[in-house]
Amino acid sequence: MSERTLAYTDIGSGPPVLALHGAYSAGAEIHAFLDPVLPGHRRIYPDLPGHGDSATARVDSAAGAVAALLELLDHAVGDEPVLVVGHSFGAHLARGLAAQRPEQVRGLALICPMVPDDMHAEDAVIVEDDGSATTLPPEQADTFTGYFVVRTAATLARYRSAVLPVLDTWEDAAVERMMTNDALDMTQSYGHPVLIMTGRQDAWVGYRQHAGLLEAYPRATSLVLADAGHALPHERPEAFASALQLWLREATQR
Image 1: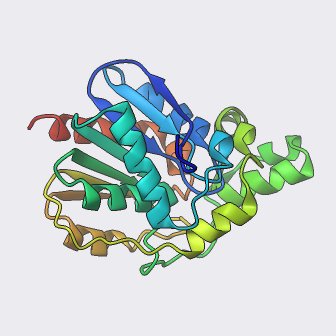
Image 2: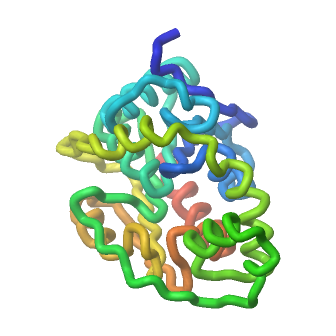
Image 3: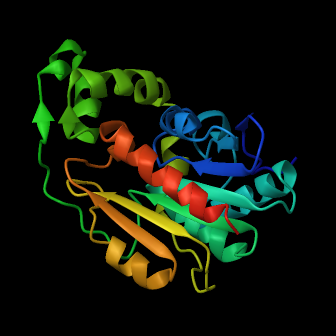
């Protein structure tokens, strides 16, 4: 076992999907919003280096995180084709994986992707607020309102079930090192289906990076969702599920 071995949850059977959470989160969050969309697929949810049960994995850069994920793929799926979904920083790492294994990674879904050289965070806008945050303790209310632009009883329930359990499960210095050293080699061409989903009100990474990603991936489809921010999968779950299902069909046809 190497020093960068990652903990992961492995669920179900069928064509494998590797799902990568964002920074300052853990695999349990992406599991919560993605698992209902993936019946008939094997779902692999790692905790990224410095996060969750992988908090002690020794990785100091995004390139090191990709290397750890390649080791996980070799162990978990061998040379079997795989689809990769990434949210935020996880989408950045997903792109790095596809560049390293363009034939094995048969499809990419980039959700609110962080693109280090193309960040255009939007001004913070509250789409809807029914006062639900007032039921939370102050610190939890701050994390809820800092992440969600749709603040309703429904999104509060998703925050409590998916986000609250992973808060403070990371090692700050390790995550900061990995995100500071974020360069990845993206020069390898990639011709499989790519889905790009961004939130129009995303105050963390913005939505304008989708234009550059469309240029980078010849089989990319981009969807910019209004009334959604960085918590898009929690705020617009029906639209998220519909787009993912279309991408899954396209990516598994070949």
